[in-house]
Length: 334
Image (cartoon, rainbow, N blue to C red; front, top):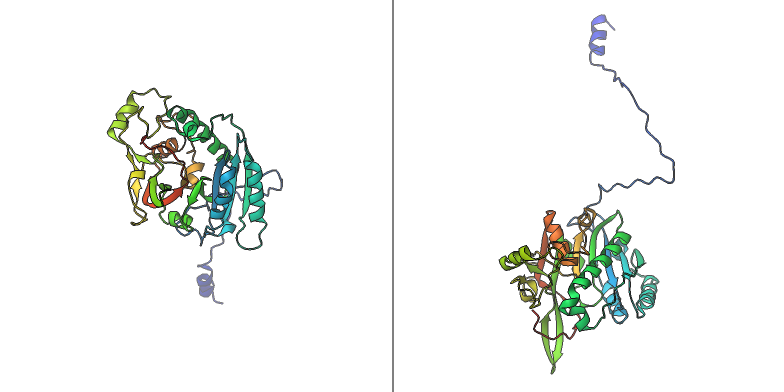
């Protein structure tokens, strides 16, 4: 090799130099756990990404409804190996825990694709003494204490069950009568932070099916409601549909028709708790169910208020109907 050829050959070579090189740190202690939340997403393609869904149901004196609850859960078309179930049983005086345990054993012992990925039962008594009849549960005087207690129950359940790899949290009450089998996929497709359906019920009178509107906790705020809130003590919890406080809010229950476009959306300021799909990161960010008056709302309505304050979107589907049991309430409150 001539001197010129040697200079030309060496001219394109640069040896890398590492200054202050640090060897990797190796952690071997079994008491240290690393959790990387960065890959966890709530996307519109959850089946491709194998996104896990957590279904949460608080229970109190719910024994009569549990079998039907599982009949509907087992029909859900979202892959059951991606679904975790969790229940909170509290302040029950009936056989809720036993019936729940037997139903779970029946479902989880199957050898087909029906069993779910995992199940958790949380027991926590919160000192709730209100009766379960219509007057006790839905009378005006009961609403503040009842909603605060329900908010606390939901928070205990959420804190006990939410895992780092959950992408979605699906709150589903035990007393749903019927709902679409594809409800999880249908809701995820909307890609909303928080989404609720319309809640109706069937009532049969003289052989005629009367479609009743059930949940008046999903609403849009009004000027009357804003003015009223500005005059109330901060510890007062507003309850919808009662003559004691006039709000003029727009109720989603009075909108829509299940025969119309099920994907029509409307923004909401308050939501009911019968059926809620939430992106898990909303909860991880600290948005829970106030067991106190937050902007004069508690539990699910307070949850919606808190979420909107934090910049999250809260929406409802007026034409997407989930059917609740008929509680035989007398008309006139709302």
